[in-house]
Length: 215
Ligand SMILES: [Zn+2]
Image (cartoon, rainbow, N blue to C red; front, side, top):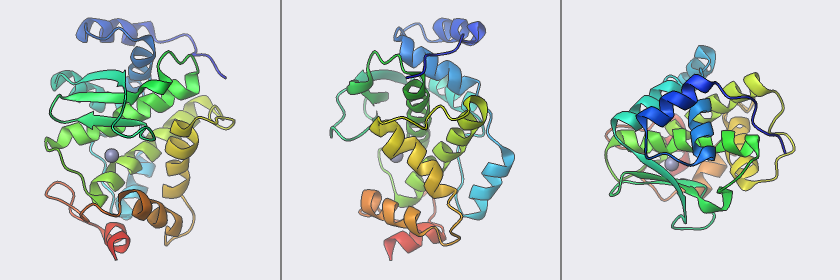
């Protein structure tokens, strides 16, 4: 387990001032890390060539949206226990699986930041629905964020056993940036997890990968 490095005090102070409801130290740390996270333009372009468009161009963009839309973030029971995080449209709340509550493991805290980023994507759409393309857009954004954390913190995730890392953020980085040009493993995974959703929607028209998943 890796502990958090000395945080950027300014982000902590800003977040505590802008979101007075926010008391949980793990969530504050996750948001401070997200707020400081820059995405690589090359990674964004790589996704774009795959037909994947990400809604936020940096972690700060997502945090700004969370503040503006007054989204609450808390640990709670998700509707299914295998879900890492979800956005409750009716309540405007991002829920993080309560099994990670009180974590001191910095790698898990970064993964929570990535989960918040993904759910802030759903919140941005202002509808309660999702689609294969919508999930591709937000999971692709996770992959870009994950690469930014890897660049910043090195091999921090490599020994992790927690599902939110091993079967979540680390896995999607591997699948989206798979050297296989046909992205067969990505297609299989998304089909298995999200294959019942429609291929696309108003905000996320389906690209070639989403159409391949629905075939
Ligand atoms: Zn999602």
